[in-house]
Length: 331
Image (cartoon, rainbow, N blue to C red; front, top):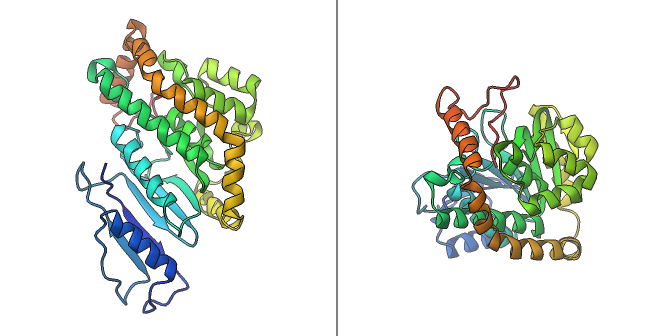
């Protein structure tokens, strides 16, 4: 995929008329090598931007701002940042570019939506067998899990800044980050069984690594979404703050994480996570074939069809009819 995103490199201490720093020059060279069209730096601004031509159209659901040592990746795919194949491809392309940049040692992932949703998880249309194909589903599943395993092993210090609801694939994305900051109002968890779909094996295993097997079993077998306070008590998130302070809190933590020697962090991640990720990567290649059979079971088809009908009639924002009006259960 050819990436379309907007990257701003911020340097608040640099005078607007000053030349680019060495690191900014290196980043410009990297972006140009990847086909970016770069504007000539203007004296009236202290940032530079680069636009990538997109194979999928002129608009992107991802924007990235590079600050002093770290990047902020914002998702803005209306209405609830549902994760389809294209968005997973964009996320992987962004991660590749940022990991290759000498300017970036940390990454914060957040939502750019007005609605209080981090991401409602995988787009149900990618899972509903009558609307897709086995080949498309396999590409979708492998792409998403490749990104997630790469995020978990990334050399970058990673933080999920979660405002609001974070079910299913959104929860998994956050668990693949090193640190999680969540708003005081919201919900989080892997709720796949509520759709009649087994929790993906390594998604469940990663939750168990984070919060322990007993606690993970109770959540995974019921598909329960828990509150931010419950998530913090279990260790699923690290901080709970007011929703207006989520990104600020994440940036404060990141300012400290980027000071830790990157080589040591990378080597330690390899030591702690490589075996898990290698096994995960071998498994997700074979997983689509097994999952496709489940997605074609009558019970699963009925459950997914009902969920899609709810989304298309009166709930176009992807919200369920539950009391808290959280995003509909997704995978």
